[in-house]
Amino acid sequence: MKILVTGGCGFIGSAVVRQAIAAGHRVVNLDALTYAANPANVAGVAGDPAYAFEQADIRDRAALDRVFATHDPDAVMHLAAESHVDRSIDGPGDFIATNVTGTFHLLEAARAHWTRKGRPAGFRFHHISTDEVFGSLPPDPAIRFTETTPYDPRSPYSASKAGSDHLVRAWFETYGLPVVMTNCSNNYGPYHFPEKLIPVVILNALHGRPIPVYGAGANIRDWLYVEDHAAALLLVLARGAVGRSYNIGGEAEARNIDLVRKLCALMDELRPAGAPHDRLIRFVADRPGHDARYAIDAGRIRAELGWAPTVSLDEGLRRTVAWYLDNAAWWRPLLDRPGVGQRLGTPG
Image 1 (cartoon, rainbow, N blue to C red):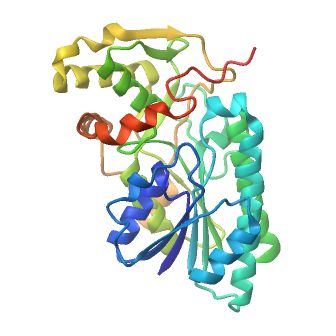
Image 2 (cartoon, rainbow, N blue to C red):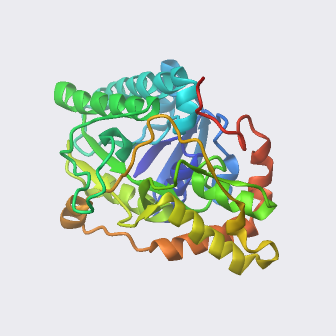
């Protein structure tokens, strides 16, 4: 299968690219190379004859039409997005332009391609989204997001992703475009851009800098190792029912403060020179509209497709900390990019 992956130089997208190539697929990586993208994420497959790269923006319909015509993909995996909640608070326009308008242009380019090809039944448009579109959960562990949970986005980021989800469903219902959809919990692992919680904690601990924790650190997230997520995404592409959505979660809930302390303990073990690293924890003003809890019910993908996470939170965190300690050449240049290392999302 030839797969067009949008955002393939990003965190999750690059994991999909690497796994797809390893599985024998041909991959066209379409990426605009904005601030959070990094070609080094796919350096290990860049020389493979099954890999091609196209620098293009999903907001550019003419560029999309050219890529479809040139590469003739059998499927699209749409991961290109602006994804940082704090940045969406400061600059929501970029999130609407990319996540909503860009998804519209990609849907239209894919529909035109599919139509020209005679509407092949095997074509797929796989839209990858987030559990944040569902809003915030109460603390009751028995309550989790399902595929039928009503949408209730609380940030400009989650609202823009909710908008893109609705567009994809509409293109299926109105035009018959064969789509599959997924909503995931919080990802972590190697190649995570260093503005998100886990890499920020690791790198601040490594440099002896304050580790910021929003509010009291009581917010709960369901953590999913990125390689587990990529495997699930490829499985949904291959076997998911057309028009169906699948929630993908790591089944690993943790309060932010507990997660931070786990990371500090791993740093104490793996880089003891700076121990105890939890002395660096600083509680800071909370993010506006900070959702209290996310948790995924992954029963549908488990029952229908046989997927389950394989990496526990403790093992995944250990792998992640070790990777950052061993790969300073990857993350060091990224620290100079705009906004990295700064507190964002605090409008006056």
